[in-house]
Length: 140
Image (cartoon, rainbow, N blue to C red; front, top):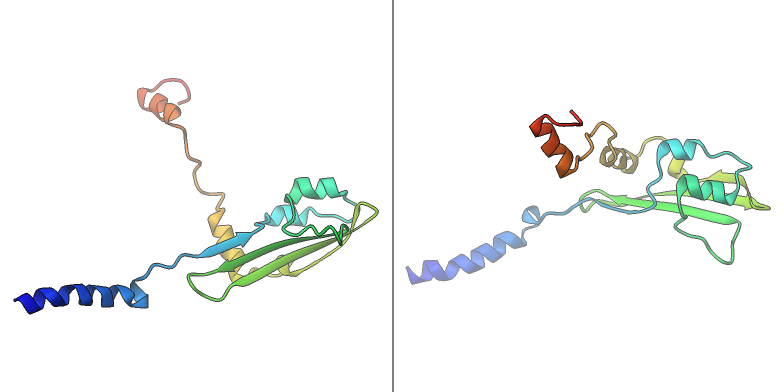
């Protein structure tokens, strides 16, 4: 009986050390650009217009002030990370050209990020509006 009790702890440690029992989450890092916002980019836009549309770039080098890089990586549950990049080039303060794989056909990273930003999901209501709906008050 004493032997059985002494084997419980090593058995539990062995089971938790197995890779199948450890939870691994999806990892997303960097700029998540809205597909519609990227589609609105046009040559001739000012840096300020681009920044309002896409936000601050991941990389804004003081040595390359006319180049902005938006980067995003996505690794599905311990899998190989996928990297998406959008590079914008400016001339005289206006967008001159763009390149990168951010605009490529839907990748696994893009699909996963789109699922995270599903517009069909109902917005979260604040507690006071829920109470008003329960009482049949204003807002119903």
